[in-house]
Every structure is written in C-alpha cells, then in structure tokens.
Length: 261
Image (cartoon, rainbow, N blue to C red; front, side):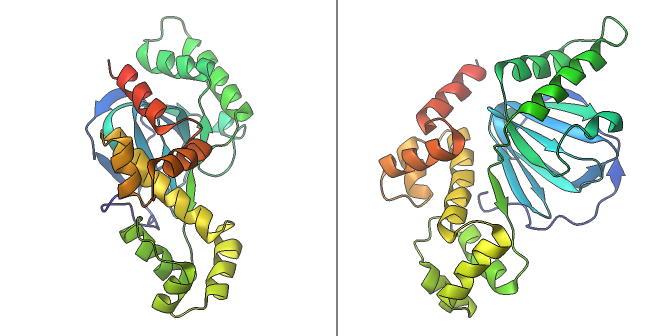
C-alpha cells in the first residue's frame, strides 16, 4: 500500500478474543499484528481494507470479504471512511473454510447476511448461529478473489520487491532491478515464479492495483491514479484494474459513493 505499507512479515502476536460487530473507522486506521483463537471474517461495506500476514498482503474493496483462520497473526489497515463489519467464526465452523487467509467475492446474499448479522440484535435464541452458518456456506462456495500480493524469502528477491514497494510507479525493468540487487534477469525471473508463483509483470501489476484501490478509495481521480501508480495512460490502467478487480475503476468509485450515502 502507499508509503506507510504494512511490513512484509507479521511478527508473532498475543492472541486476543475475536471481536464482533460494526462501526465506522477513519481513513488510515490500523490494527497492529495480532491473532485470534477463533476464525474472523472482516467486511468493508464501504471503504477498503488491507490484511497483512507473513505470507503477504491481501486487499479487500467493498465487493470482497476477508477470512483469517484461527491463530494466524495478521494486521489490518483501512482506506477511506470504512464501514467495517467483523464476525467471529467458531472453531467448529472453521473447518468448512480454507486454512489460509484469503479474500472472497461478495454475493448479494452474502452481503445482506453480513449486514444483518452485524446490525441486528438477536431476538430469538440461535438466530445468529443460523445466519452465521449461511454466511459460512456462502464463503465455502464463493470463488477466492484474493488480490494477494505474496512476499519473498530470498534476499535478492526481497530487495527487488522492496524497491517496487517504495515506488510502485517505478518503470524499472527486471534486468535493471537485477543489477541493483546483484542478480541476473534470469535469476530474478525464476525467483518470481518459484517463490511467488507469478511473473514479475503480474506481481508488479498486483502491487499497483493495491495502491490504486487505496487512491480511488481516498477520492483520487481515475486519471490521477493511473499516473500515480505507473500506467502510461488511463485506458491501460482501466483494462488492468477491470481484469483484477472485476469492475472498472469508475464503477468502483461510483459504488463507493452510493454506499456512503
């Protein structure tokens, strides 16, 4: 994310009880590394959030929901005025979901269930549990759309990605990055594929999309965001954003405005 991005590795943290509820958080609000004894679902009904773990960073705009398994150290940072909804997933339901942090698409049913469970007091015994099982069923069937930016362990690759984190718009080629960190272009290319399971181009595009989501959530225009994140023209930015996020940046901002009314 922008200059104050989360560290690539989240240190071990004291476990906390898993919170639940709803509330508005200001732009830039962050929660330091921690973990929970139960699973946690976090949904930004408006705004966006980034979740950082030792495996990298996941970003969730308002059409995504995050899942963090029990005992998994993580931190959060929120972008824009964020309407955050937090749910606890009891241990007996956690086995229905993947064993690693992820981000899932939010279906209309899932969105309404998340809002209802965090808005309404429980009027009948067991009502919240029944609604929670619907949410878990929806998450279990949802496609992972994680916007995941993995982090490297190899020192040379970590040095190269650190340079890109510092300036996502940097137009440096892979060969130039290699010269800066003491590795050949072929070696860095291999490391991107073997350690991060994606090409250099795909990793940098995902990094830029992370920054773009933050800028758009803060109200920056599509054209300004394209330039700030390193695209040569708005149309190429729109194409890349749509491919990764599933909607155009203009549509994303329009949805943010509608949700904040």
